[in-house]
Image: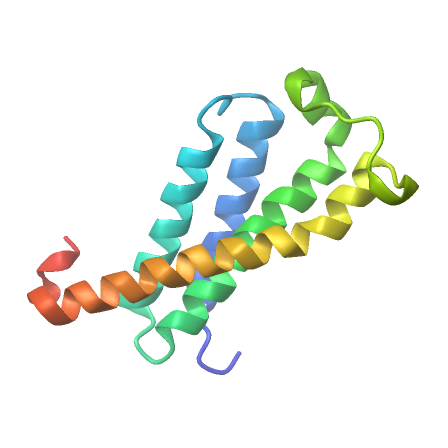
Length: 138
């Protein structure tokens, strides 16, 4: 993995698994977006501070992997997810696909957005470090 931090990628995947577990069990009910933003910002900060060779690339890939892992894990346990979160239950989706198929097909698009958010967080941290020095993390 040329200039990719395996530690950041592994942490992102584990974060995605924990997020998925929290949503499948409805533990994070009502706080999903806040938790996702915190996780993506953390991945971006970690990439900016601990992957100096390619921080933006690491941030994007980390955010992408975190979201993809979370959504695909939710898709694997979609019945349990719908049982715990009945407000999100869907029986039919576009193109005559089932909800599980739709989840697996659409996950990469959402993961691209998540990667972009993580990349933006890493860029912001880099700017703040240049302005304020190493005091930004602490």
